[in-house]
Image (cartoon, rainbow, N blue to C red; front, top):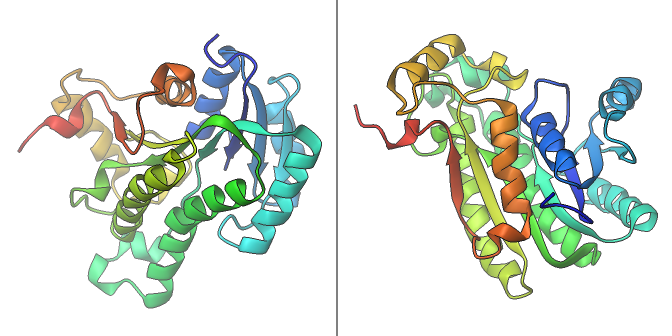
Length: 257
């Protein structure tokens, strides 16, 4: 129960197949009290049903995690109703479909800005607003999700790779900024998983096959396995780790051609 007596905010839960759900289950099984944010008031009943297994949890609508005033409003409400929290999981990313299907060189200005705004700036905003509103307890831990496409060219990942590279760099700068107050910031680079977001990547099944073939462990990862890594980073057991990208991908990232 390494998260006993800790309150964790998980941003971006969508369904039972999402990495955010895997993190939620692992954190809950390790003693955490959970708070969620999700997009769309129309999804309220679905999210409430999804999170009902996490006893005592609460969920709040946040339609745009990259919009300053909305994040401030929702975070203020979360703090008022729940007090300070011990960790934040940022599981938010998006790119326009055409920017994933076309060659990267054809990425539009709007598409480039959108992917970076939603996928990278939203994490910076999350950290800043949480700090400004004094909603983080001492030794709080922030965790975001990234992917191998941030460092290598992967067909169909395109502008999302650039956004994830910006996110990973943001992790390092935020770690330095928040480290002055004893807070930690890390990223988990998960192996490919069949999530709703992954459906937007062309030939995604071939990526799964390649990982299973070439990764040292010769298997793909599950949302629960990634969730366990995130739980470790949220816990005091990882108190000496900050500013890092931790790979949870069966070792695929170490392999050469």
